[in-house]
Image 1: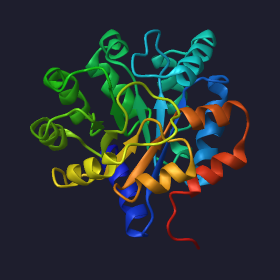
Image 2 (image 1 turned 90 degrees about the horizontal axis):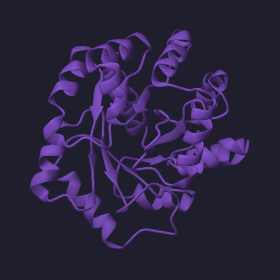
Image 3 (image 1 turned 90 degrees about the vertical axis):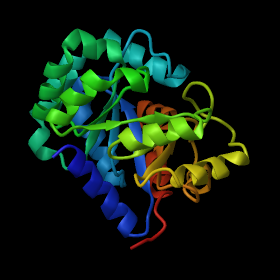
Length: 261
C-alpha cells in the first residue's frame, strides 16, 4: 500500500473537515515490546499517521528530548533491523500508516535496496530522511519507489521559492514544512511571518502541507492549522509518552479536530 495508504488516511481526515495530526515517537523508547501498544494508543487517540524515529548515535536534527529518547532506545539495543522485524510482527493488526524517520547512514549500512524491500515487508508506508540533500537522493528514491513507499521531503524556512518548488515536486504523501530554524523541541511560539510562509508554500504544491518542529500545545496546533493541512508533533509526544500521560496525548491530538461527532 505504502504511499496510497498515506494518501487515503490524509484524504479521509481532510474531507471530514479536520486537520491531520502526526505524532512522532522513538522506536524502542521503553522497549520494542511496547511499540505495538504505543502505536495503537496514538491511533485510538485520533492520529492520522505515525512518524516512527529510529535511534541514531548522531541525530543532528533532534533536540534534547528526542536525543534522550534515542539514547534510551540505543541502551535497549534497538537497531533499524530490529524495528523493522517488530513492525513486521504486527503488520496485519495495524491500520494506521507508519512513516520511518531515519538518518541516511543507517540506510547506507543496511543497503538502500534491502532497506526498501524490508520496509515493504514490514508494512512501512513512508520514509523521512532529514540529513540527505535533494540532489543526492536518487538511489534511495528509486529503491523506495520500486516498493511504493512514499519519500517525504522536508522544506526549511530558508528554502528559496525555486528550491521549494523542486522539493514540492519530489515529495510524496505530504510536504514536511519545518517551522523553526534549528533542532526539534518545544518552543513558546512562532513568528508572525510563518503563516505567510506556509500560505506561499501552498501555491507551490498540490501535496498536503504539514508543519513540524516546535509544535507542543493545542494552541500551536490550532494556530498552525489555519495555514496548513496538519501538524507533526515530536518532543511533546515523546515526553508525554515517557511519563505515561495518556490523557494529555489525547487532548493534544484531538486539538487538530475541527469537527466533532
